[in-house]
Image (cartoon, rainbow, N blue to C red; front, side):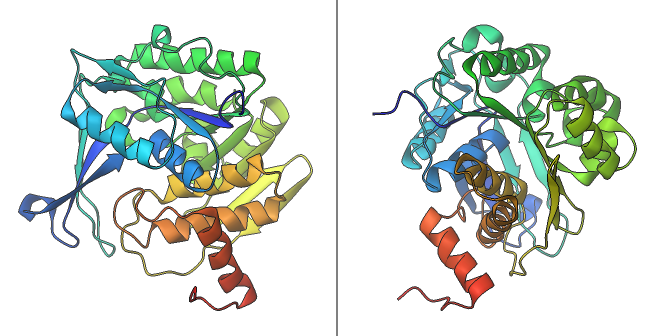
Length: 322
């Protein structure tokens, strides 16, 4: 029996109500219930890929919170350190899904249990044994106390000897550009592993994405930076090299959650010591599989599915599993 999880994530998990495909949110009648949240998405992705993962966060003591925990447990995520708040509700996310046009996303998170997260809610042994802590910029933007909790987690990770992975995951509805720069910019510089869109690096660090990545490697703590490009390609850079990956062409059913899927694929490869070029290919594969199914997590694959799909794409193996 292992002493603890390989990876820990902490952040907001919400109940997702996804409108029937192709129907605008204001006209939708039927909804599919699921779970959404950048950090919980990554936790689910890593768990499905065979890793031991723990999710930390706060949920309301309500049916929505029960549903979120049930979904995460079903994916094999350890939620034993998750807190329940009897006074604040679980956040709710409503959205539609249109592969060919803009998607309407409505958040109901003001006053939520996740926004009330504070350092006291993080147990001193929450990261014991973990090799990796994955965070995003969403959590510190929820509230000042959640920002304090994020900084406390980074300190705990340092003491535990765990690497810190950080994805800015900029969401304009959570704050102005100045607020993102002030709150999330410094945290980006504390990360050992950075996964960020080129537009996010430009915003948070100023200048171009390449210059920002170079600065994180030379002046920050970063060992590796993955730049997610606007054309959906990706670049990984470290002090020892540079690697490129084009996206795999697939029919997109629901593009939301692609970044979290990519992160889970890349972090899985990092945990397993996979070479950078293969790591990027695995990340692109996991993202490609995720966007072919509705909801943030429904298309997240197992390790067997990931490998079989990559063999089919890269090696011409039979795409039908018989």
